[in-house]
Length: 243
Image (cartoon, rainbow, N blue to C red; front, side, top):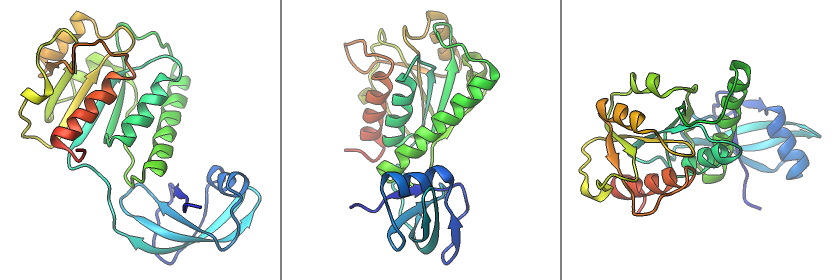
């Protein structure tokens, strides 16, 4: 069996012991049926990972002895932030999961004109925690050691007023500008994508006025859960670590 990779919110140090979080322990003991003496890999999102051994295992509870630090990173040299209109149902989970696997460093959920998702403050906070956990699970699977940050959801207007770093791109299927025609001298790219139905013409104009360049990634109109993943893959291939 492949050694499980486990994220913990607790700071790790070689030689220490930690009581694993309840959800993690339950997964290891009840789902994977791991026992005392078996090995896991721990990471705390601050870079690198640690070898560890389960030293006390009970149903739904586990302690681990932290072993040596492994200074390995799988991060792209390119920082990619995905700003995306909030989608309905499981689409947003899918986007967060796959964008994490593709190496984004941050995801900014946005309320836009065509966003059909309505959330009060309590539900929004719960959703943000859920999306962060989706990113954690994706990191455990794809072997990233640094977590992408899920930002608190804000309006598009508020987001645009705070974004001023690197190459800024807004997906617009009626644009003729392609990624392979662009030159990027930054190590930071911000990609703006609309929800179902896309961004309105007013929103695209607003993005353009704040430094976002319109971008097309092909002749077909892609769904909101497909378009950002295709664009991120191309961006990583051109300027990041995918080839």
